[in-house]
Length: 295
Length: 240
Image 1 (tube, each protein chain N blue to C red):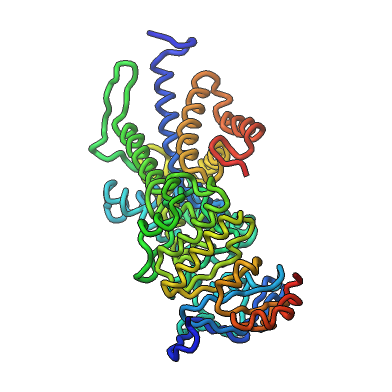
Image 2 (cartoon, each protein chain N blue to C red):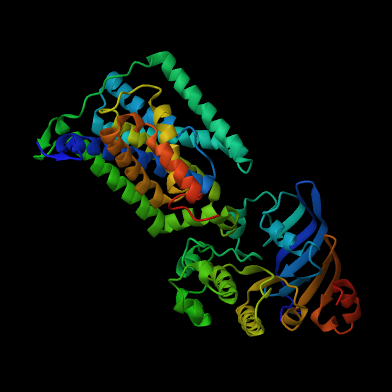
């Protein structure tokens, strides 16, 4: 069997695949965080809970009503997105313009409540959700086995990330978002309904998180606490990429997943710390993040 | 000219306007009227409350009391985006060019609020520099070009009342002259203009009337034909 640095190629490529998959989730989640931070200046600690809700709603809808994966892929993000917009409208809007710490605490509190209520009902042992029939099995690439579902996750995550980047950087709606990020008051003075734009942006960021949650349901353990585990890593990714940078969030997400996968292969004990190590180094040399603009 | 035509239309009427930023009380009962097609300036020292008056019209200050009628409609309870839709174009003192947008994106950003605005071609004819630099980042332009862009941006929207805050500040004389030509052209098109201006020599030949603002109040109203008679009063207020 061929080896690279004393590690079998199959093992290495297997870990790389897991790294890219994790990276795809990091990218989807940090993208939503970056979009929300850009316009609302809110550090959305409820983002992990929204990701978890996406997965939980998928499983619950299947168990209760037999709603299949494809419907859930559309319906769960919409439901969670509307839920997010309600939180924005009834809670976050009231503390807009206050210090960051208030929205941080509010979203953190909301996340704990959502998580607590669901833990009370469903426990933390993990709900089962199977891979959709279309993606059962996989293909042997010669050097590794690639499950179809994982290939689908990577492909669809990339398409959604690129689509979001394109919408923000190249369209009129995106120009509103970018301009609103710089000076929301002046935008409103031009006749743009900024409060509505803010609600929609928060809803969209939350939808991205819930979409990642649906994608995760068949491959990760679905529990009410799944969001709080991943959120801390995603925040590190956003800090490394640079707060508010859309392209940076995507590239850094995938990159960090791969770095984590490689560390798992070559020095497993450091795998859960490596992203934070990168964060420390980046903050020392580029405080605004790899892709952030210097303030 | 708008005077004495017998069909004057009040586009803006402000009565008893007070405005506050947090604890500080900035405007202490502003009263003024601007008729359609008029060019009116707000003169005064820095900190007199002229910029705040424009911001208060846009509902961009903390708290306001009093009355602001636009086209006969009370706007004190209107959100800022509704005020723009009444045909008001606001050009802030800091110009507000967006650095994440290129020149053309900046230019086409504000939505059209009324018909009759200038087309992109007309704007590029009026400001040829902007055409040449239409794909540059907005904030990479020179100060003068950024000011042109900030003006051009609200001309496209069809706004028929422009609130212009210190548009000549810090610009070279040749650019100031160009802005004067632009204002004359806009006036000929029948636009109403409220101009906050430090440069009295720029404003004097353009304006129909002047309001002198001090300590958040209107101290004096001077018609263009009274300027020479009231020059000493004016000098007293402006400290020139």
